[in-house]
Image (cartoon, rainbow, N blue to C red; front, side, top):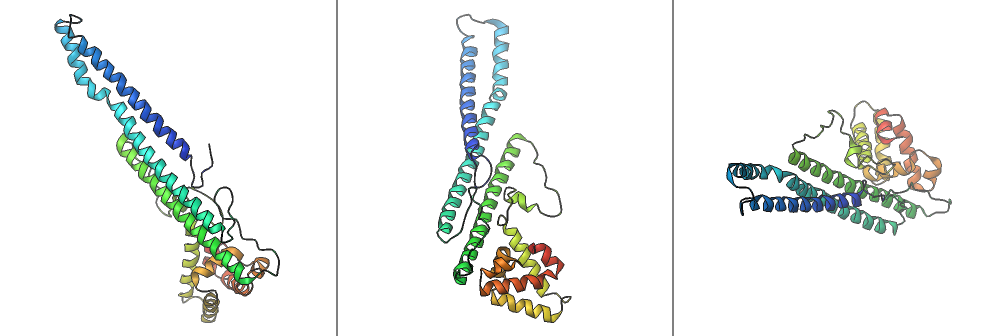
Length: 276
């Protein structure tokens, strides 16, 4: 099985669709031959009389039911084939995104995941380092969006198959939404846009909270403004966090990120949400 950047075995889905389509056609052909044989019994004295008539009547009555497996296979083939085509399109889209972002300095591994940003040498240009960090974060967001679309297509296909076969779908547990399921249960630092959303949400909530001292809130606000807003601040937090070494590679922005991370460490909800 080849490794897919969006999860699963897309080639296997395509092969399954084709096999079911072929099987459906073969089954229909066999039924057609049976139709011919049954019809032939009514001619030339092959099976005259009441018994023959009853047999042919029984076949005519049972024929729609006998054809159901072939129809089911054909419809299932169509659903799986459509899913395979959609996933193939999304994977090609992700390949194209990866190629474009790699030209901006984003390092991507063999599974499509962006690698953790490592900038060697203290003489690196801060602006270039920040640009790479922002490009890495942007690619991560685009990748998460594509993975979510892929999971939506899988969910839609599952719903169609459930309706076709009359088999109920397994309900998702109530409570917290299993975000990893939305993106194919991939793991990694950049895999999930939800991580950034949680972090940003926790920071915004903390800033608006009456529990945090006003002086601390003002300091956090200034640091975030210095980094270009909450979104950029969160992106850079994921790159450097409170690491002095990683922050140093980002120059002025790195110092702001480190200071912001240290301020946020004292706020439990933000610490948890941002992985500090």
